[in-house]
Image (cartoon, rainbow, N blue to C red):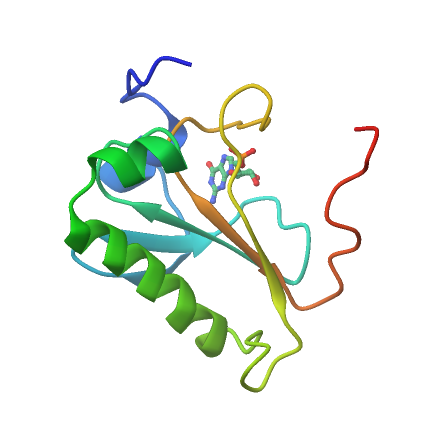
Length: 127
Ligand code: 5GP
C-alpha cells in the first residue's frame, strides 16, 4: 500500500471542519470523536491531526510528541468513558485497521475504542 495521503478522506474533512463530528476530546495533536455507526455503546475514534494513513505510517513518520499524545489520550478516554478494565469499567477493545487486508475504510490512521458491552471473539479464524 502506498502511503500517499488523500486529503479528501472523511477524517481530513472532519479535521478541517468541513464535516461535523461529535467531539469527545481534543488536544494539540489528537482528536477523538464518536463513530457515526457505533458497534457497541462506546465507540470512539481517536485520530492524529497530522496526515498519516496507517499505524505503521504514523509510528514511522510522526513526532514522539504526536505519538505519545495519541496513546495517552486513548488511555485517558478509557477511564473517562468508564470502560477501563483497571478502573471502574468492564473493559474495551482497541482496534486499528490498515490497508486492504485490514479492511480499512477511511485512509487516515485511527484507533477505535469499543466497549460498553462484550466485544466477542477477537477475529474469526476463517474470515
Ligand atoms: P475503518 O474500517 O477505516 O477502521 O473504520 C472507519 C470508521 O469510521 C467506521 O467505523 C465508520 O463507521 C466511521 N466513519 C465513517 N465515516 C464517518 C464519518 O463521516 N463520521 C464519523 N464520526 N465516523 C465515520
